[in-house]
Length: 120
Image 1: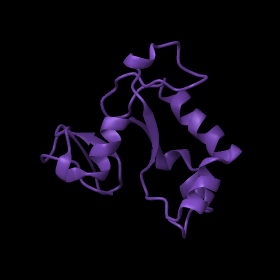
Image 2: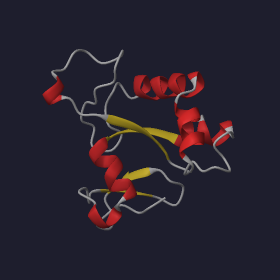
Image 3: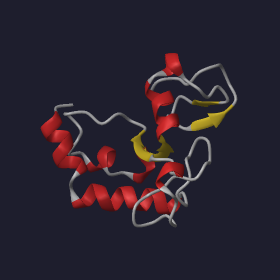
Image 4: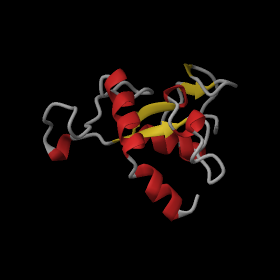
């Protein structure tokens, strides 16, 4: 995805509102490992050196072709809030640190299964 399109989308009010909603629904915890994630304006205060950062991840990948398709880009059914470590595991399965979760054929996270995390 080109930087300009991504920057415009992730700076939009619609994305920021959707992102906030995802974290609120998940009570600021990682969807995969269930550890607390610090989210500005939502989470209680956590010292900076103890904060776990998080990312709202698109289950169906966001591309230049679908970045303005709200059924993918802003659909909360296509989004999960994950900590940075789990997000890295999703995108870099060869370096996955979690082997007790995987994605099913519909992109849903399920416990157990083969070692590593299936790429979406």
